[in-house]
Length: 141
Image (cartoon, rainbow, N blue to C red; front, side, top):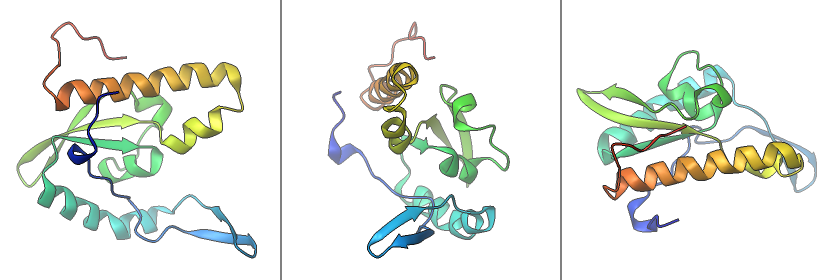
């Protein structure tokens, strides 16, 4: 893919992920509530302000809640990068599927091919911007 690990910083929207144990040692992740996202949002924004990334990848619906009050859902907004203003700085946000969604889509063969292709397209778009390989005629969809 051509992305270098030293050029990437990973973080999470939620600092302490809500889960419930069904069996000893086995957990099931729960989607965080709006209140939990709101409680952690300022920490994510402080990280962005400190690191000043060239691109922000909003991986999944939970991440999109940091940048939009009512995001339309990742399947509707992926493929549509937008600028996010924070302390007079503009950041490019690229909504894309969360890797766990790709993993779950594997069980639906027809859906997986499309989702996997879109995920790869998103990563190529990000790579091209990071390494200034972006072409004017590049069509991002």
